[in-house]
Image (cartoon, rainbow, N blue to C red):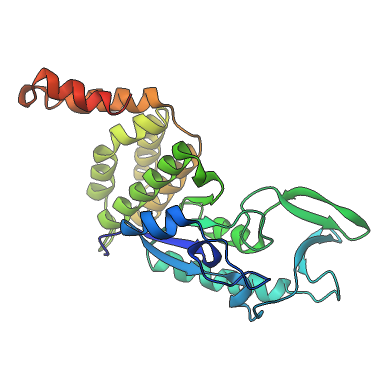
Length: 272
């Protein structure tokens, strides 16, 4: 298990010139600063299915009630190629230990939300789609946190996402060699304060989930996966600074006998 969490990233965000026009969209904070603490894995689905650089612009279109990935100028359909590539790569990334994915905003392959979808008989687009690769990845791996790079420009959202990534990384480390009841309970106990600081209601919800599934004699591997899936759903909501401060106060309280009042105040002030 690598010391650094693995983070998959749309390749253009890491400075690779793989966009349709031969340019990049480097997100420097991620590629040049946070890369010190993360193992970054670049991926461009459009290059992955054999499209060159530069290449024609492609878009999502709704045809006969289905979403297609097409070249609007000549009608060439890339849907099947993208779906096949997405399924294979999503499984490979998950099995390699990826702890999160940063996707390119507005991309017909990588956008997470509000991606343009065109109607076959309408030149106007509705912003109600998701990139085709992203759709497959999140469907197959609902337990892995994802975000668009535009949201990571906000410090609060970036911090919350990276906290979820590290939470997932700890889950992978704990589960190395296989899950059993002891490991699942230990992981939950070790992360109670994290859950309270991020999604307070999730602590008890996850406890009930664990013991309900134990009572039904469900395989521990499934329980661990279900636990992380439900935890990440709960963590989708951005936390408040007050919750984090409260969790820090509880943590500091466990070491109060070993800390001076000034040390205690300094730690808590850092999170206000």
